[in-house]
Image (tube, rainbow, N blue to C red; front, top):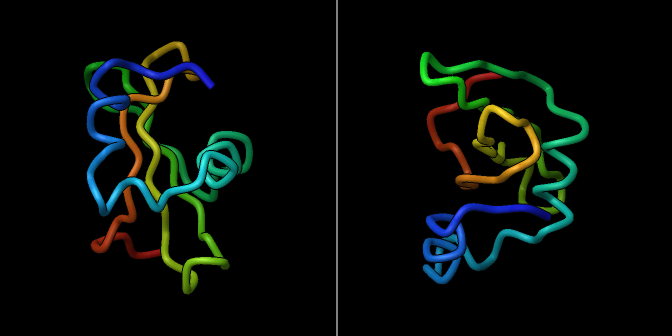
Length: 78
């Protein structure tokens, strides 16, 4: 999985280290929703049943393959 240096650094935080790579891939490959930001970055969301059905947001660079951020989005409304 390609990722930015920012993502590598933030991944060490306790709230982010619990996010499995397979969950990130799931969101990348099968998003329930996608939004393209003004800067070209792509936000994708998908429900993670293994984590109490919470929604994981993955932010990709405009190439749609490089992960810039990933976190459980408390404010997401399906």
